Image (cartoon, one colour):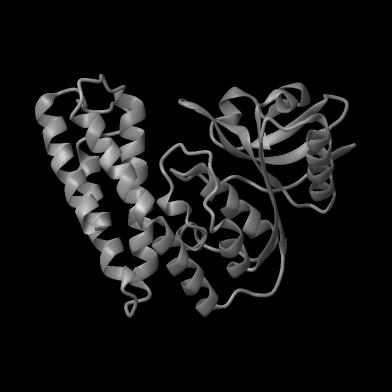
Length: 275
């Protein structure tokens, strides 16, 4: 088999959002990244997390897509065979597939798009973070050796309705508040410890947090009657102050005591806004 889909990953601090932007565009239900991120709950995920939010399916449905979602740790041989069949089915239908480990980042594997298959190469054509710099091809051997199997395939369903989007986004944010607060307080614990922080990765995480909450504020600004508008705006402003302490890619000085104290105060303020 040889098949290729004309779909392109769209850069985003949260790579899975960038993949879904491309997928939704390909099935002719395009949405902006802040709408996709809000409806699925991806804007509230911990940076660099490979986990899928529990509201993923509901959010995709509200966006106008039926979805096949596979998420397995240590998949067996049969599960890998079924996954390859699913990918081939989607490619034949001119639809890309999102998969964890297809994209590449400075901090390890991440989400990317499978946009083609070439049996002569025994490889998948991929598009995602840094794939052009590393290689646009991922060998089936490497794909099969991954310890985790996460795939998302989408098909167009009924047209999305604004009320459904708002409802899904509201559910996603409400369900995420406790985990977001725990994430912020865990960061406080690290800053108050004697652990050395790697500047580049830490700054990328700080920028991701700020960018995602900025998009959440953008979504809820369009819905001024929602109680979430105030929370999202406060978090966006507070975390933008946090991000300025850790410019990417240089990282600032995360091991400077004064910087760590300032960051701690900002994160505690942000956590308090969610209490």
